[in-house]
Image (cartoon, rainbow, N blue to C red; front, side, top):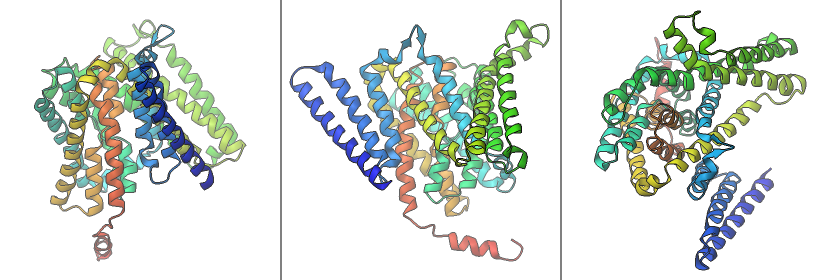
Length: 450
């Protein structure tokens, strides 16, 4: 295995070196048409090389994002329309798949755990939905961004924490249980908090429809996440009936039939049966329900084949979903970038600077606020990462689907990759530093009455 990784790593670095030489020769020879393929190949080869290198594996995803961004900058038409269909229609389904994947990592216990640690979760939620959007608004004003781009900066600060924070917290020796609970709770609050904050802070920049944004979040985030919670139960429950062919096959078939039924639901079918406001809600949530049911059917069928029939590993979903999620994010960013290519060339550096400032402020405010509130070192690290890392995919989907603005989606497209880089660096730095108060925590917990 180690030899294979080394081979992949060196092959990737070799190809990237060839790509650099090809790009330089093309530029010198006056053949600009060859520079694009060389640059795309350079970053793709580097991403492959990083995947094979233990120390660099954590930033391989970001390099893949850069490769897709490069491809969309050189060849924007490739991410425009295929066979007459605008590829932006893929953005919401891809986000729904990503959120389903997040749901499979959660359980009901992650939501009820807030009862055992209410104060850290409450503090994190307040910081998440107050500091980050206000900082986003301040940065947008300081940089003088045009209204739609400024709205995107505020939007990335108004969405809940991203699932990447859970992994970063684990690497940083933080409180993973608290991180998962904070992510789950902020996601549950987002259908109300995100539209409310956007209405208050960005309503003068772009039109904000509170109810449309709320329904979009429910459809794009909450419904697939709930489906993922159900999939978590199917995948990881030790209940005897979920280890047998019959019940799991029945779940797969029932989910498929339910998905078929949802696909047939339309306004004509529902009108006269349900009140008009209820019809609007049902139709707004139809896409999320359809994706969720299809994925539930796929998960049940895959468990039936892999775990029950073939007796394969139980952690196959843990390996598959991150790859699917990362691929989905890369495609989303490429689609967004291709539609805002000219604006990105103009404000790209300013948006990168804004991302650094916004993200760093989140880490600092999260950490030191938790420290001032008397939280432990592990909790401080957790709150810092939860506040500093946002759900960029959700922000991108809202910008395209609700705000109808590729320009507003630029900030999420740039902030997302940067957050992965900074989060990885911060988590690695904390990983090398011992948690100074760990022993003190253990002694406190051991005291009578605790």
